[in-house]
Length: 148
Image (tube, rainbow, N blue to C red):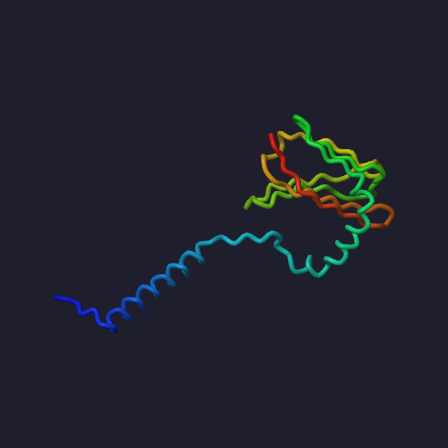
């Protein structure tokens, strides 16, 4: 049996190939795992103006902040900041299973922390510091690459 390659046969083959391509794309997109950065991103988005205000409040501290990596530890120091409460979060954005580290601030003491590098994986972290001092909120966010 010999196939006649007229325009109708070519059009039918083209449509079948196109449909196969589309079905392959649909299959691949359903297998793609979607990871949200934040589970409750909508309420956080609505309250983002408060975060902007906290970032503005922290500008004087940001210029004085020291963040150094030494051989086996990370040093974080913010002179003049005496938090009433707050925390430091080492957020690891490229991990599906969250390996974030949250460390609370000591109340009334100047921010000076030493972190052991052995408790971190090598890679990029986002250092998020949020604290309250005398009823005013402060927020600093800094990217850091931890190497071992």
